[in-house]
Length: 269
Image (tube, rainbow, N blue to C red):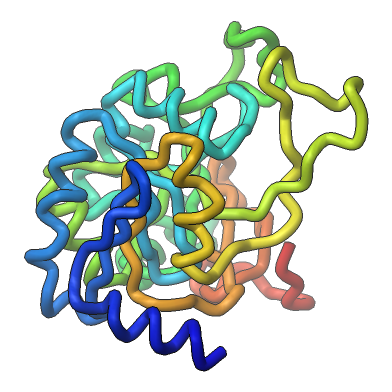
């Protein structure tokens, strides 16, 4: 523990190169966000990095860059039909890439848009219907096979994190980032478990220490890690808003009652 603390304290001075992956240490309050200029430039040029949010750390890339999206999937080793989320800095971006929040259909029903305005930015993932503006590489149908989309509704998870560092990255990039939580992967147990040629690895544990993320993913082509220190294993609250009635998909850091959902038991998965 002491060794880690010493290393971390030294590295807090700025950026450290670990192979081809840059390890950028900044303060959690964003007061030295000028150190992020290199990370922003890499995102603009198709890079994939790991960034902090107000919950877990997340892989991130430019949502408009198809090659970067595929690179993110390769680094994390996830299938092409694995759902990803978009990190947005403002509601106008949500309006652009989704069909918006559903309007109430009965008296007394919670207005999803008003609820979102009250709690966002915050620790929520809102599943919304995707608009045609969202690149096809960013969203896949759950039944899609071999990279071909099945004709059905397209959905996407939307996040607006209340994190100073993440907000700075979004503001400087000038648009949303595609994201996926950073997890430790368990290798396939047999050849039958392989995903096509590359292999699909099973997610089994959230990673919270950025220094370990550099070691785990730097050799796979990750371009940078933005480090604000370890984060607790507390994910966002996921709410499905694709229908008139909101559905709690996963309990997390955010209170689902804001969307008119009564939470029975708080279980993270």
